[in-house]
Length: 244
Image 1 (cartoon, rainbow, N blue to C red):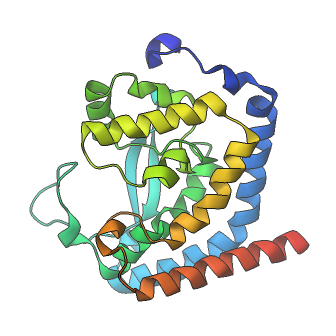
Image 2: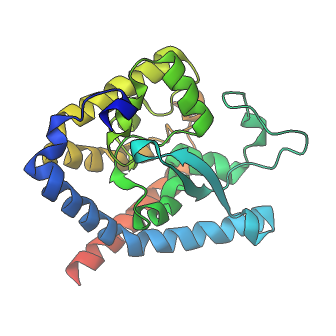
């Protein structure tokens, strides 16, 4: 595996926390958010159904690069209209295809909620490096030395690189920065770090700085209010679940 990923296995992965504590924490968090997240998924699914008018287009499935370089099928909410002309190239501007609802889902990262299914399937964790599209991964491996090293762990719905830098543009410098953050995460791999990421993730979501969010920075938006209400309902539901 070391030869395949081009780097030694990070030592912190074999710590007591890495072997026992972290899997327990990720399982606990997944269990706590499953019910409230399911209610949000149901609501957003109905909205997407009204937008696309087809049950088959509520969700979007795409092959992504997983742990140890094993691809898997990632699930998320569909946020774009279909391109009737050709398959869009990775890195090209597709903002004209974003639906109004899709724009909010991307900025708030709520489009990632269906990846709870990927967690249940064992392809992802709650926290970890974001899984790249296969073309994006191949490009990054070619242009960013050592990029495969981030594949030592399962990819996550949220992670250190996400709360630090958000979406990375299709540029070498951006992907190199993403790799630095992911390697920093793997080098520490502690309970404190994971809890910090889990705490900061809702704050990052409320900031609406996901895909395209930087273009509306400082502009009052109804989406921010909606995001606050959705996340508040998630927190309240989690609290009720813990109390029960």
